[in-house]
View 1 (cartoon, one colour):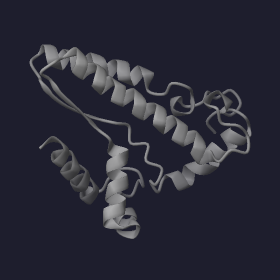
View 2 (cartoon, helix red, strand yellow):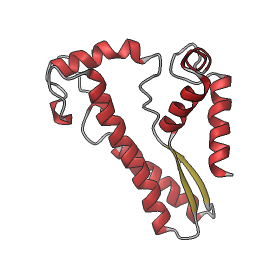
View 3 (spheres, helix red, strand yellow):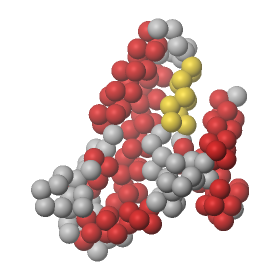
View 4 (cartoon, one colour):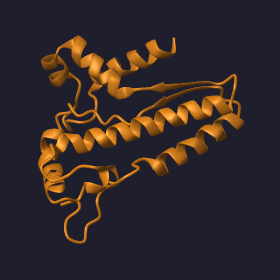
Length: 162
């Protein structure tokens, strides 16, 4: 299991998640800007804790929490496992949102929009109803959107940029 004897914790379970990815994304945005692009839609990391796949992941996270392996995140043995993921999701959200704000400030006249996919998924679940959302949004993997799910997310992205 992740974080077991001799196995490192996955990046999502370590402090400062997404640091490398944001650096790569920043370089990509700069390269696209130098090439003439002026409109950007940057999607946040969808650490959406209502995904069905989390039902399989919670026992692993619980073991990591209770073994003290997540104390660097401020999560102690006995804390709910959801807390660990909420801390990490918040850190990723702040990192991506900061990237968009920094890029926009550095490049006046550029339209760079942060697409908060977690907030969109929360709104879709509320609007569609939990049963319809849970049954229709995901493919067999339980974490990747179905065709219907992609259509819903794309519609929200279009609404945000229109």
